[in-house]
Image (tube, rainbow, N blue to C red; front, side):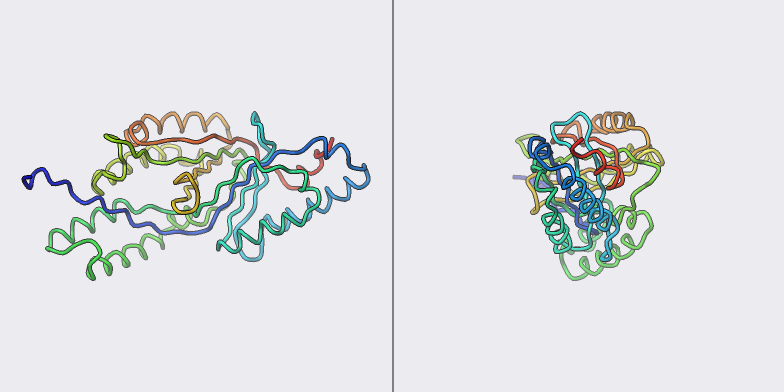
Length: 280
């Protein structure tokens, strides 16, 4: 084999992480709700609304959103962002204490952590290491990468991605999981870091075209869930979800390498507003 036939190593990109995220997709057991005494149901609704309101902005940081789903076999999506995995576990335990939520049947859940993939920086530093005769992962490369990660993490743009704030002017929510394809001839993980960086930069430009109309939260799930990433979109107009997903599917990276799970769409409401309609 000649040198020209040797593929460059497929190094993973550096990432920096923020809050853990849990998306819970749930459906009401309506016969169970209808069997409840009316006065008891009112009391249980009030307790659930109070608990969910306290979880909306917990003392540990992060937030919880209640998103009744539209056009789906499930009824609601609860979205939790918390600083640590243990905090996510505590949010689960708090919900488990609510008697009313015993009537909610789990349909799907997705565990992940917000991330910023530093493809461009990773490709640059890999090339710099090769140019000086070093290698990815050597002492100089690790030091350079630590400096770059610190700088990237400190930027306002990356902070918004890692620690997202609920946009009050964008009540509609769309969530879907996705992975990169791993089949012969279309294996994302066999591509060089430089090629993946090029593809992701082009993909990112499409997303930037929707700045001000969509807030995107990307969360990584490798090692945490069956799918590899979760995408949570917020918008003022739900039609924007169709537009941005269509545009992004025509990017080379999605057209060639993306696999998508189910889509969940709804409109965020306050916990008390959601509870008022339960059982009616």
